[in-house]
Image 1: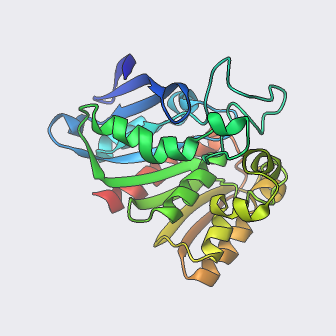
Image 2 (image 1 turned 180 degrees about the vertical axis):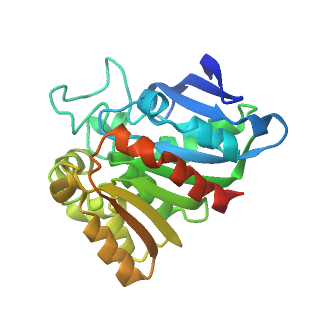
Image 3 (image 1 turned 45 degrees about the vertical axis):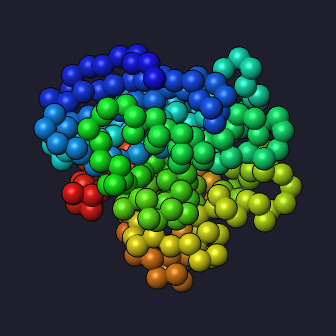
Length: 278
């Protein structure tokens, strides 16, 4: 693991690291914010999964998470969204697929199966790397959240491993990606033509199939241009009601899909997680 940079912020340290990934077969970059409390004790960790077209850098620059994380004593882990590199299969003119659009799943269809293994990367490889990095992180206290494609990833991964993640939340998640117009084509290319294979990466269908978390927090802007065709929070609401999952769904009047929306409610989410992780 190579340290690319470290900068002091709100008494803590913002790191950026890179490493050669076995899961994705390329070099990967991720960010870690360590709060000042980590100088004296191990702190809980909160994973943030970014959305389509993003890297680890977007939330670092625009997410405004460091003040709240520093005050509440939570480490923030910001991975990339997909594999990167000249030899990685891609569709450069399609922002909903390929580099920047890994959907936090393990592809099974060639040529994408060789590199697009973001589920394994997030769930297995990167945690092992962090365990050996010497950072004062308590891996027994983990939460996860994300935005859009990352919100989809956060909720699906939490549903499949509730014993690992104590808390889970999302900003404007893609609530049923197997049928949404901007994610179904990606599922088909990554996972093949059989919709049965898509269920393991669709939060509403996972809930339908019996997967559970104790509670969910979701914030969604009412002026989001993708609300009706891509995100469809009403589908998650219906699934949670049927399953008895405690969902707090905040429909934020006038907010869109941008980081201006995310940064407005970022501290609320970190505080919500911190209450459950401390």
